[in-house]
Amino acid sequence: MDLNQFNEKQKAVLKQFREALNDCQLPDSEDVYLIRWLIARDFDLAKAEKMLRNSIEWRRKFKIDALREELKEPEVLSKYFPAGFVGRDKSFNPSMESAIKLIQVYEANYPEYLHRVFVINAPTIFAIGFSMIKPFLNERTRNKIQIFNHDIKQWKAALLTEIDAEELPACYGGKKTDPDGNPNCATLASPVNMGGVVPKSYYFSGKSDTTNKTPLTVANGSKEHVEFQVKRAGDVLKWDFHTEEGDIAFALYKKQDGELIPIVHFDRVDCDMSTEEGELQCDDTGVYVVEFDNNFSYLRSKKIWYSIKVESATARVNGTDLDSP
Image (tube, rainbow, N blue to C red; front, side):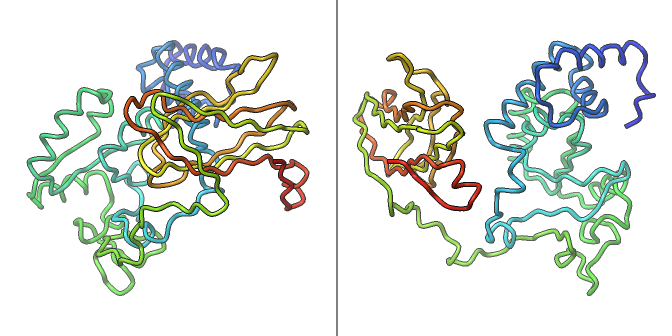
């Protein structure tokens, strides 16, 4: 993106935008990054600032910046999830064929990265569903989405207006193929995965492991507290829990002068199909309180299995575990 395309008034707004974000730890501080947020909100400074601050909180909550290092892609997804990246469009942006549910995430957290979305061979029901969510999308984003029915000539021509034939798989009207001539580009370094029948060996059993976990029943309309002593500043409190059925609210507090000071704020968690994991580096010593809250459930109690421990910061550096009770 060339900043010379913007007028002096817009550049002045960019300067004000940067100053307004002095207190933020930005993922990227370059002008090109910041101006995308202004473009997404038509250079409305207040709206762009709110949008970026919300995104920073989203990145913190879901640990977005650590995903590539910490998240291991499940084998079943790498083999059978029907998607892929095979080239670049004429604006030199990676092609993004995303499900409609992801568009709002792109819009809110990656403004002006989404260049174009083509939905091809869309059934009538899809068009109906999309018309229902359109009002919730920003106008700039709506204008980037093109939906085509089963008219192959129409959608192939549209794709070629945005993507060079050499970058587009032959099955979509381009010239790109596998070395063996496969038009689906299934064996390239960055293949388009066409999915397939998932073997039963990958099926989810629906039961989380309870090994080395402590059971706890939280009655309907009540909450339970579990306390942990942190003896050294910098130690890490780690948690891993799941419910046998239904959701549970989780929060973490520090006990101070008889009061509970929120550290991790109250949040309802769906964790009956998979475990909820997290950790917190404790800057201060003292008593930390884990809260499992079922106040929102008037009729059902919830059974939880949890493993919570305090890990020494020194032990983490040395690659060993030193846990306090």
